[in-house]
Length: 505
Image (cartoon, rainbow, N blue to C red; front, side):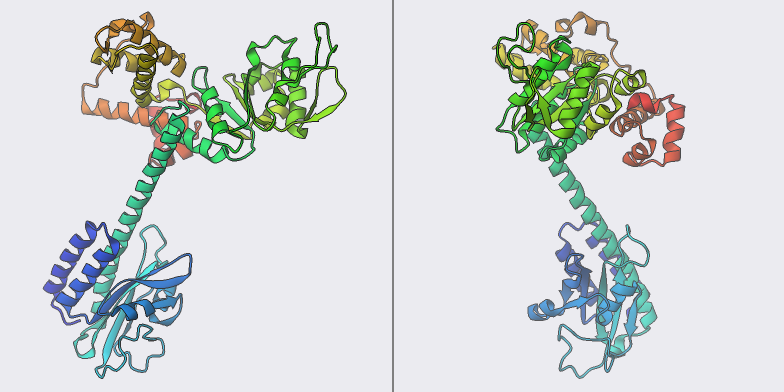
């Protein structure tokens, strides 16, 4: 390549500007090849990329080729110069293509030419792959008498290939980010219809788990504090499943008298006990073809736990006082706010039932760990209760917002909902003010604003680490990966801020 060093530098500068701001990959690559022609005298050039599905190396952009020649530019890995470069990850340069068996001229663009041609091909390597793995190749040819030092030509083309690889990586990252945002938006839209509201990362994880498990028959175990919305998760799973048209039967195990639990769940025959005047089907029978939601399953006595285990294992039951075995066709979703691991240790909950229920756990984070969702939820409840109570309430005053954000919400989303309903009824000028909030919130001190940049950074770090630990159930390695830290660094910051990973889970 006979271009001067300054011409090469100017060309690289222009190429970097074209590729750095690229939004349309083929167009950016065509501009790149045109610049190589204008500044360096390249006859023909192309960028070929490996299609991982077909295994073929296909032309993505070219200069100096007709449409028919472009279509013919396909190679297998290892085939021809281009295929060999992609296979080995090493450049290859030919001072003359005449008589070279590796040079296949698959495009047919050099047929009939009398002049000798030099050819250079370099690999394009993705920054995320190893140094020897190529995802494509950049090649050029030019008149043999203008080729100059081919080693310099290869060095220059390697620089161009790196710019192309960086642009490809940026476009792929942008595409993945846009796809991720689109999927998140779809999940939020789908499950907000079930009153599951949230834009926090922890709630995105919940939405994604619901989406994955809904179409299966798998038993789901929803864990979380009281008031976090476990019943809403059960509804979202049921109505997103193939069983959506069948019954969803909800049972609060903690609200059932111990003497009636077995009758309620499994039914009873006439005369099974005093007062059993007729046959009564249980909740599992009523949920046939649909879903049964066992809320507060940790409150079940041991005898009922044994019968529930049989239902889960064998898909059959017998009514109380009966001898006939009935098959069970109901998907089970269980939930609890209890620490069942402690109950296992104390012998209050069967270990075999625990593992049978805990097939697909979903953890619902408490509201204090998803503060970014507080105002979103508040607006949702304002709209609902303003419509329900025919009140013209539309906004929350700044001082009331401070109280909402400062309060720890021990009752979680349920407490926030009750708080907003009360405020909607008390508000008089379309605005909820701090005086309309319950007395418990009046005592909540507004969150103190940081007085310095280091203090603000420290608060933000703590919030991000807490959210990551909550989303990963206290797993330091996963939490570190989630927020871009090393495991050593997150361990240091956890100790620095006095955080307990287990208490964040």
